[in-house]
Amino acid sequence: MPGSAPMITTPIHFEIKVTATSRSHSPFRWRTWNARTDDPGCGVRALEQFHLSKGRCMSTSLKLRLFAHSWRSDWNHGNAHFLRGLANELSRFGHEVRCYEAEDSWSFINLLQEGEKGKQSVQQFTAAFPDLNLKIYSELDFRQFAERELYDADVVVVHEWNSPAVVDTILTLKSKLDFYALFHDTHHRAYTNPKQISQFRIDQFDGVLAFGEAIRQIYKTVFKARRGWTFHEAADTAHFYPRFSGNSTDVNWIGNWGDEERTRELQEFLAAPLSTLKQTRKAVYGVRYPPDGIAQLEKAGINYCGYLSNLSAQEIYGQSLLTLHIPRRCYANGLSGVPTIRMFEALACGIPLICSPWTDSEGLFRTNQDYICVPDGRSMEHARNLHLTASKPSGSATLVRIAPSNL
Image (cartoon, rainbow, N blue to C red; front, top):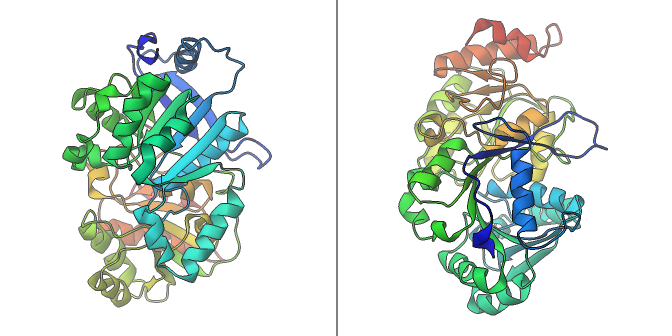
């Protein structure tokens, strides 16, 4: 039975490292170690214990069932980036992976309202992930659907952005169908809106995969998760890798407006500094920008380009000299150490990156080598000027030119 698996008393840190190897290699390089004992085999042993406790041979592939808000749509849904790549890679390794989403997911409905852009995005997804086994369900008859789909599952992974009713149904089937259930969180609600997370019976899951150590601690202490693992996001380097195609833009930022979560930061680190660069080509991509936000960008001489499919982002990075990373406020304070997926993707594409205040408390990157972090808007302006000057034909387009300034 799932609950009888041996307890792992020390936290295990799972990380997917972005690599710069050739495309013929695996898009992901996996490293596992124990966060306290630095035992590189602990993560593997934990999976072996789970698998063997069900009486299965380790040579048998796992039957994995993944539930997410949407796989087809990335409209205001950054979680989809990593989830798609993860599912694709697990399948490539020989596991039987099925992915599920509701027929009327909010993100997908909004994507369709983008017209031709939305249609092209869905076509891109289908072409990029032709082997992804995706099944659409209706919540009206979800229990019958779930019983059919999960009857032989080994592990069911439920992403944080699912309806409480769907999650509750999966948990009620857990003991009946004898599968492990893991809760996967790549969002900040556990910190910013814990009441919403409390709708889920977290203590009934076999464990929680949290995309940062701070989030993992919240699930262990606040929501009483049985087990918790740090499981960072990463770039899907099957689709994100250096591809330089000329410089149609000098500076870009790819990110959504959010719910007043970084309005002040966008003014200080985006609009205000870029407004001083009069002869610079500047572009912003994203959705849910209010009219006054778009007006701010226009006043700063920034071209607002609207929705950009995630699979098109690498082309934009390849056409720009510099990109920005402006984390939501929660990631700059209580959730420090958790970068957004955009940071992984930008670095995988080889574009120089300047970041507003953010602390890499988990040591994922090399500050002032992989990227530059600035303390305020004035430093952001100075760093951009330095890099753009160095990137001209007479200079050197390298981040190393900025790093010695210790901005």
